[in-house]
Length: 119
Length: 110
Image (cartoon, rainbow over all chains, first blue to last red; front, top):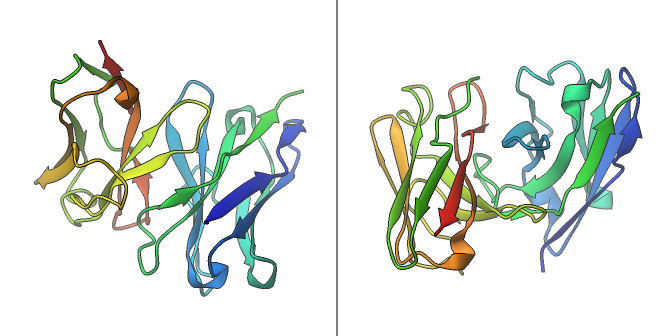
């Protein structure tokens, strides 16, 4: 059974940093592209970043230069390093898997981890 | 990258059919057959309902169908059921990004 479990969320001050983790199981992690998607409270889903199997990374303009996605295949883990955090980054962050050769959509999602940016 | 445009809300009665539109541009929806739809119940993980415009993943009811014409994609739900009440999001591949989301549509089953 495919499982994605996010961790690392919490309360952080504006300007601070946080590192999210996503533990994957039930599939060969190294063979799949992965995504982070977030939902700001009361708002819609927003794509945050993606990483390919070869390490290629992708970001929207809203987080480029502040967030870094990475993966550690031997540990079946995905990460999101978030720096220079702002109140607008407060959201539930989801880890999601893209099917093989199909980075443009996600077939399995985790339950999410809440990040709150506040003083 | 601008979000795709969806209606904020739609509603229908049990048994009826509804359609949710997703309007993009010639750089995303219109350029690629890479439109997906997700169902999201608050507090739960989003669920893939349709991928690559009209394909249903295993386990998704055939009451859900997808289509595309020009720069607009559509999700149709037939035979509405109470459990269909949720938020629905479209996404598309774009010329500059692997994913862009629509703003989301709240479906209310009356």
